[in-house]
Amino acid sequence: MQSYERHAKVLELLAVERRVFTNQLARMFDVSRETVRRDLLDMEQEGVLVRVHGGATAVERDIAPEPAFSERLVAHAGKKAAIGALAATLIPRGSTVFIDAGTTTCAFARALARVGDFRIITNSIEIARLTGPAQTCDTLLLGGRPHADVPATYGEMTLSEIDRFLADYAVISPVGLHADRGATDYALHEAEVARAMMRRSRDCIMLCHSEKIGTESRVSICRLDEIGHLVTDETAERSLRLPRGEIHYAPIRPGA
Image (cartoon, rainbow, N blue to C red):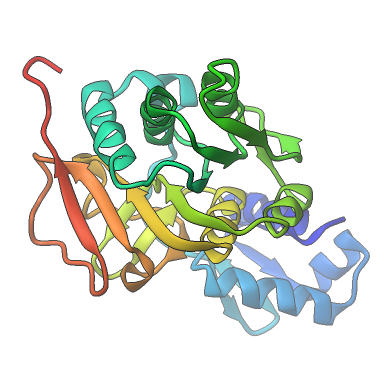
């Protein structure tokens, strides 16, 4: 069993039992207690649990689960289209771009394909479907395990393939963006892909519509000082600041 699979199972257990024990997990996964301790340490650093003597407990936060991907695809469509169009203007033609799986990044990919002459590397099956047949961009779909809800690939193979490339930009769409917590995702496997893409890129662009500003989810992606550009819509709260980056506000078409 790979580490990401153990992490996912630990989260499932915590959702039901609220506490797990090191010895219990070592027997369940058939690994050493030291391996379990490393797993729990990694997960605590991601903010998804709290280590205690003999194991770990769930993080007590009132965080609602994400809606289904099909619902998110049509929600705030006008804002996402505006954000995607503005973000596409930040990237010079000929650039290599990592794009993670999200509904706002789908809107961005459409805008990028209309311009053309980019190399797109993505784990999103939907983005590959949108940009591949257009033949205006060189699109590469990362391998891995397909997800049940989100049309995308995840897991050790996906992370390994990301490490084979060096991109100019990582374009990421988080679940929340908070002044103290930074960028967060709901699921560990999504955050792992986003972090890997950022690590292998020269710059990071976050796409985040106004309803996500000031909110947080379960798993950390990065701090605010790791973001080069934030693209949001013009209705977003203006108090947020990026220590080392720039915020761009996309105008929304009337009626969008």
